[in-house]
Length: 500
Image (cartoon, rainbow, N blue to C red; front, side, top):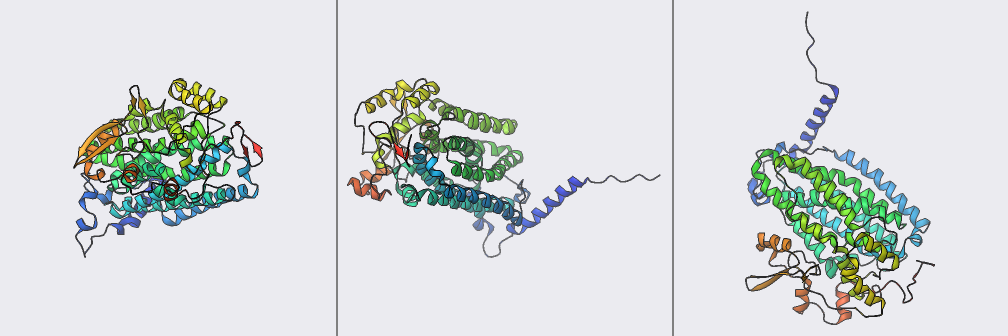
């Protein structure tokens, strides 16, 4: 009696078929060049010590074909623009809390440009990665990021119909002192090798910080009646799942391949969690705690849940068996939580006339909430706001020292006062840093960072105008009166016909 041979199941056969098809789809991206040596086409420094024996084995977990990609994105774009059309037709901007709209001038301008910066980052990954499947995945992501940038430009156009301060975003991002830390960070990713860039962009940014800003923050936006922007954030986040998978797959593949990759990946994880944390301090933190009139959660609570518990906890649980540990600078971040948004908001308020959006004093409800969430708030900044309420002019047209690594103002504090690390002397130049992590990251790669000039360097060198009006024009503020205090002296502000 003959026995029936075992057969492969339908599901397994289908998966094998898709994998084979995708390998065939990406195969021609790995040709042997005849006109230059392969080392010139993919210079060895772009792998920077990463150990991997056969780049053709590197896999993309999504194995997405272009025609399928286009179909999915088309449906998402149609849905998003229906929301924009509906919001414009029924004038939803008149319902949004005035404080939140001012924040949108900061967030939407910066986010659109960072999406474009990430597009360039993934174009570089697609160009220089030695793995064909990774090049294909990075190409898709560069298209994603370009589309996201265009959607933010569309939002800026939608909002600019009703309110000033949503135009001139390209010049602001390039020149304004508030954006220099963000710009510097994403240009740092652009100049990294493809695998470090994926740790920064696809792992830390996409998994860690987009959950804060594309999942938690839209809930806060919706509570302040900004539904169009909230939908834009959620639509953008729907692409991030694929981006996250690229980062997770790359880390796991390299860790499985060779234990010598572990210290390299750990060093990049340490670096980019800190670098992107410093960037988030300039935007994310103050939206949860200050711009939101209707508050949903504190930045401290959101950071703990979405970054520490979900991102760090999940990453270590998944890759800990290979030896990966939580980022070395995580405790510095947690120690920062009780002061972060408050010192940033104070710093911005003191320079409110140098901004294109309005800041404001915390009212009684804000103070009560902030003291509940941050018990040390009265001791940290309560006295400052008491003086402001009492009529003291706290305006400051100068810029404090800026960190030579992260390009963020040295505004943070500890029990001894402002936290300024340094000096470090290199080639006749003195460098200062806002924190121990920034100093250590700089000293690990001094040749990469020592040539950069901060905006304070440019001001002191005379490379920027000394006249206040000309200075504002150069950094992107050509329309007077965009900054300042949102509220009138009596504490009431009328926005689009109703008071807040």
